[in-house]
Image (tube, rainbow, N blue to C red; front, side, top):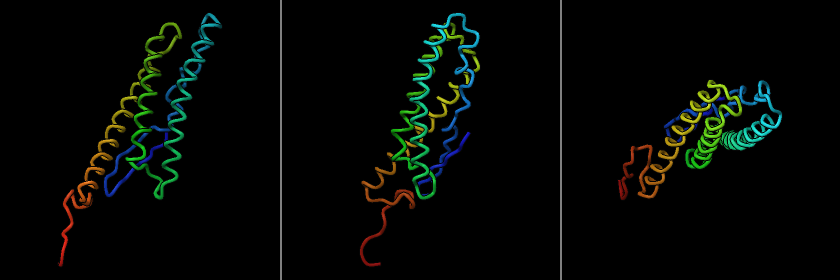
Length: 156
């Protein structure tokens, strides 16, 4: 599990679990224990497609972090991607919950993905709120390092 941090002017938020390739190991082995090959193929294909979408977003976030000078995510740039990650995890979670019996999804897999979804949703909310506040401060001409206060102007 990788942990990425994003910092902007002294504020840091932890973004854990972007490379959660181990979150759903049980869901990828669905074909074991399924009685009908068609059922297993359908479940595996659907879960694979939803998981690939999620992993693509995770990879783009990891690339974004690696491309920054400090290897950290910028809240303004990562906000839309973090929201997309939460949405993709929610879609996967909804599919797993809806097809739990049909696809023989273990409760543990659903609980693990739910934890990941809740964490992603929380981090996305924090990043987007921070980005919005920073944008508001810049529009007002204030410096976030000074707690939103405007710098003095004129002769000192």
